[in-house]
Length: 242
Ligand code: NDP
Image (cartoon, rainbow, N blue to C red; front, side, top):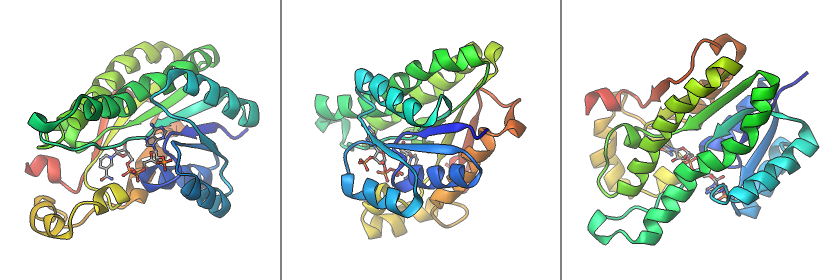
C-alpha cells in the first residue's frame, strides 16, 4: 500500500520538487498551498497531484485541511513542513507584522501542521516528518532576524519532537538548504547574487530544488529509519565556509 505524504507549500519551488519526487518514489502525495490558485492549478494539471488550499499559520485551517486530505487519500504517514515566506527588513525597521507573519508561517506553521497528524502517527506506530529549515537558521543573516529566529526554532522543534516520537517509530528530521534557485532566491537582485552570494558558495552555484527533494525522499524512506533528530545541510559548502 502506498504511503500518503503531505507537503506544505508543495505546489511551487522546493515544495513542488518534493511533491514530484515523492510521487515518483511511489507515495500518494497531497500538496498544500496558501493562495496562488494559478500556480496550484497549473501544478495539478501538470503532475496530477491533488492540491489543497489552506494557511499553515492558522491551526483550525490545518485541522480542517488535514481532514480533507485524509478523507481523500487516507492517513498521513509522511509530513513535509516546507511552506515558508520571507519578510526581510533591517531589525530597526522591522514591523511587528513582518515578525509575526514569518514566525506564524515558518515556525508556528510546524506546530499547526504536525499537531493534527501526531496522534494518528503515534497510534499507527509509524511516521516520518521532515522540516525544511535554512542555512540562515543555522547561522544569522542580516535583514532576516525574523526568518533566522523562525528557522532556528524549526531545528529545536525537530530535536525535541524526535525524542517524543522515538518510542513510536516516528522520525523527525530537518533539512537546511543553502541558496536554491527558486523564486524566493531569484527575487534577489542579479548583481547581489553574482557579486555577494555566489562567491560565498564553494561549489560556485545555486542548488536545484530537486537536490533538496532527493534529501527528503531519503529521510522519509525505510532505509533512513535510524536517522532522527538530525539536521541535513545541503548548501554547496557555504556553511562550513562562513
Ligand atoms: P516559494 O516561495 O517558491 O514557495 C513557497 C510555497 O509555500 C508556495 O507553495 C506557497 O503557496 C507556500 N506557502 C507560503 N506561505 C504559506 C502558508 N501560510 N500556508 C500554506 N502554504 C504557504 O519558496 P521556496 O521553494 O523557495 O522555499 C520553500 C522552503 O524552503 C521555505 O520554507 C524556505 O524558507 C526554505 N528555504 C528556501 C531556500 C531557497 O533558497 N529558496 C533556502 C533555504 C530554505 P502559494 O503558492 O499559494 O503562495
